[in-house]
Image 1 (tube, protein in one colour):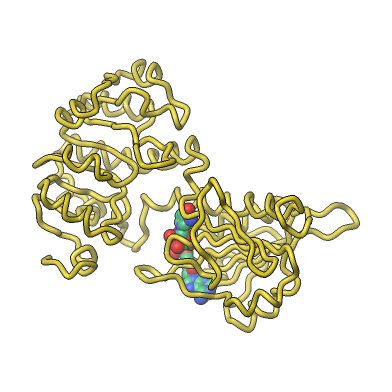
Image 2 (cartoon, protein in one colour; image 1 turned 180 degrees about the vertical axis):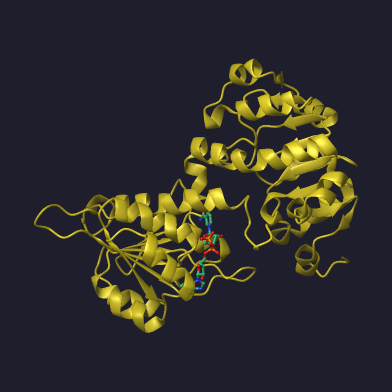
Length: 363
Ligand code: NAD
């Protein structure tokens, strides 16, 4: 099969769908890989690195889409790319169809085969192609929080780890899932006194067992959160209720319980946010103040670290891509129920219930 890797053209997207080592693996499986000129530069991979692994670098993106039997991308196709999608062509990428009727209809019209990273699902309900991005966002949340605690950014001027004789920062992590655990690990690693809140008791029990000594767990209730706010320096919002808007755990009136310069990082902003005063921001202007509290609400945090994010993403997508390329999409999804869950639209028909439900469309 010919696999095409176009350059991402969505604003500020520096990731790429395949790293040079991935090209090598696909070629070893008997495939041909076309990489658009400069596609990897944003992530630190030069055309020469792809070429030395056997890829063909191609300048003409229209030609790349025309020749490829499978297009691997990172973000959903944008308007400029709609006319390039064609009947029978496999497109393997993050689609997030439920967020865009326009994209859904464009993919239906093209009659391509849309396999969405975000809905590939394991038996236990976990979403393996979303995990690395949650890991990146969680780890970054602690890092960014530490930075914005500095006085020049409006923070309290508190050092995460304190020093001998001066106590460390108090960090509250709301949600003990993938984002939360990764945030807590880094915060605790920096020396902060860290509390993870969740509503899932078995999860809290597990975290209590495996986390370092400076991490404690607490059942998530409004009362418990209110009690902690007056002594907290950094709050990281990392809750998720699958398929629903994030629950709002900190209301505007609760900001008055915090000290000026407290920092709130709302990682759940891509699901609407878990603080009432959150509104999405960008890496250009990541923070704003409400009642002297610093708010950081960047919706695509992994975009800031494209090298790590690209490697993390391609580690998990490549094995599925190899299956699709080796067997063709129909046999690949028949053989692998996880990959089957990724098929959203095929030959104009929506085959993933939640996408159809989002727009009251036929399923
Ligand atoms: P996850 O499902 O692994 O974890 C969510 C946790 O929230 C679960 O443990 C759940 O029990 C807990 N929870 C639910 N309701 C709660 C409540 N009321 N109080 C405390 N805990 C509660 O999800 P995840 O992968 O960690 O993702 C968390 C959020 O981060 C999601 O909204 C995800 O979309 C978002 N995210 C954002 C970015 C970004 O760049 N901003 C990147 C990756 C993920």
